Amino acid sequence: MNAALKDRARHAFARQFGQEPDGLAFAPGRVNLIGDHVDYNDGLVLPLVLPLGTSVAWGRNNLGTMRAVAADFNDESDSFIPGRKSTATPGWKAYLRGMSAVLQSACGDAPQLDLAIAGDLPRGAGLSSSASLCVALGRALQASGAAVQTTPVELAQAAQRTEHEFAHVACGIMDQMAAACGQAGHAMLLDCRSLEMQHLPIPDGWAVLVVQSGVTRGLVDGAYNLRRKQCNDAARRLGLASLREARLSDLAAAALPEIEARRAQHVIEEIARVESATNCLANDDLAGFGRLLNASHASLRDLFEVSHPQVDRLVDILQRAVGNNGGARMTGGGFGGAVVAVAPGGEVQRLKNTIADEYSSSAAETIQLACGCGRHASGKTQCTLQDQHQ
Ligand code: GLA
Image (cartoon, rainbow, N blue to C red):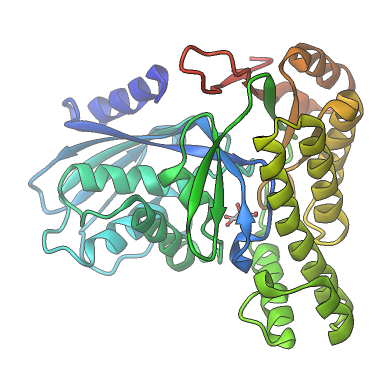
């Protein structure tokens, strides 16, 4: 966890509750390298954790209440009696109540805690700020002894349940698994059907760039849930438990409604791309990996229809600048948010300059870059996020 973020959480705690916290918890956000809109189809995904995330400072109180403050929302506060059925409008309070309820259900003691939350992930950028918040809250609750202890996978499942039941987004499990189980500098190949995972090092010399388009995701949960429904409908028509089992030849034979056929085609081909991308990682084939990213973007744009014109423009600029040496795509749920690109480490500065020169909307002001330069003593790739313009 970066020191500045830790300090922000600790200071917010001291401001609000007048004492030092007993502990600090953290969970990262993620960028998904490839494999979007396949997790809820039992597919394969390849996320990479970011050095950014959510920090939660915690301290026990004996007041019979949960009290919390959110540093990123002008110290907005919340308090509720744990164990009582409590709801809040979607937002950080709903996630707090959700994680508290979900993790408490199997445990006798109701948490009586003070919490201060601070994050440094851009919200609405498709970098999993809500999964990072949920997992960090879960870790704080567990570290305080006020919640049932779980494995990291169970913690991810609790966070997903919170998203479903308290934020009403029918998300898959990728983001929560990345936040709970991801390892810095390693892409996580996750099989969303079995929840088996492998941590694959990013080869030395590859750079991973996360560039914000500046278009934040708006009221898109309905569109996300609709995509999920279309995939489920397609699987049902094919007589399959999920699209993981589907083949392209099944689609033609089944004469699916056109929109469902397009969604299913994306899912089938995207899962295959993740498998190929994993081979490219293992073989240090950056050009091959880049081609798969480019193809993934085209599919998310044209078949799955979850991109955004401004995101397409940024992806296009990056793809042209990287050429055959890498690639770029939208990442995450879509409808705006960040773009991910892979390129040789030595190209990063040139790409940054190109973005600054050619991506001329006011959004360019907030572009951030993550660079896995792969030259660290541990031999592992590390990500550092730099704010280019601030
Ligand atoms: C969002 C969801 C994930 C996943 C991605 C798209 O981030 O939370 O479960 O479906 O969109 O890949």
